Length: 369
Image 1 (cartoon, rainbow, N blue to C red):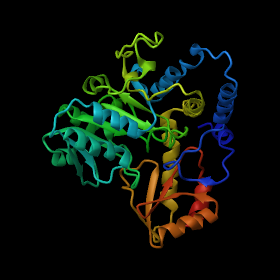
Image 2: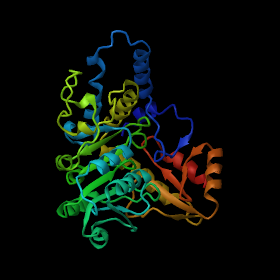
Image 3: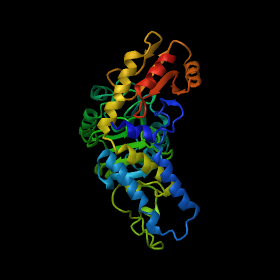
Image 4: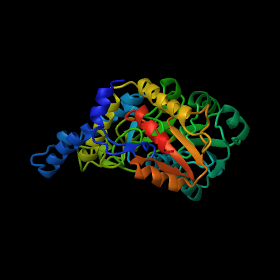
């Protein structure tokens, strides 16, 4: 990995930052791009439609390149909640259809389905399970399950799901598979083999993807696009977008029909562009290899007598959760006094290791622990 490039892009960090699972820092190039966009915002004279409208498709192409899918299958969203609401409200199902999720899922995945339960009569089930895999699915998913929705990596344990075999099984069962990759994409690789049987893959852009808050993407497979109606009109994705009074609810082809409104926002997309162009200078495998080396370095040296490892050792991503023998919040504040930034989730210390971190920083962390 080009460490000099990483160091240059993150030289502005003023703390030892192990908190990308909460909010990823943006690379330095974002500042220049945002300042350029802001200058144009402050003085928009003679700003032609052709200047700003293509921004959305440019950003769409960067998201598509990151996960190696076709541009046409990518929608621009403001959040994971946006994506799940799109699926929950557009899903062509029937009352009584079972929508299954693992217990202790992030609210962004659960709340839209609970509202859909109220509005459409779906049967929403939160199913317990330590390890989510094919055996678990065969044993626990009810026969009437029509949609299964989960996080690739759990926010509160760091548990990673092996997507490929699970996606293959769910496809065989004709279950719509929806995956939130907010705690994985950007930090670990999601392969084409894994994506090919996933119906909807979405991620918030402000964590491991290092972009601004309020921006993200969703991949909708061709099969998913046939099963999920778009329920909200958007003039920018209308077939008659340049003929303002020729009202037409038909959309441009592909997943852009699920785009959020005003998807070409120049200011925030400048931050998205900076983050994605930085990540695309490396291969996903390269980033994963480096991040995993940090994870294993930490696991080899942390004080085991003082902490219980919550994260399943055989399902590791880049999040490590530890249960402390002392008060977790007190420990977080002690680390804060040493200028080390982490998070407490569900009473456990949560550490996130990303490509701007180093083993020297981890040594400092372990010393305080």
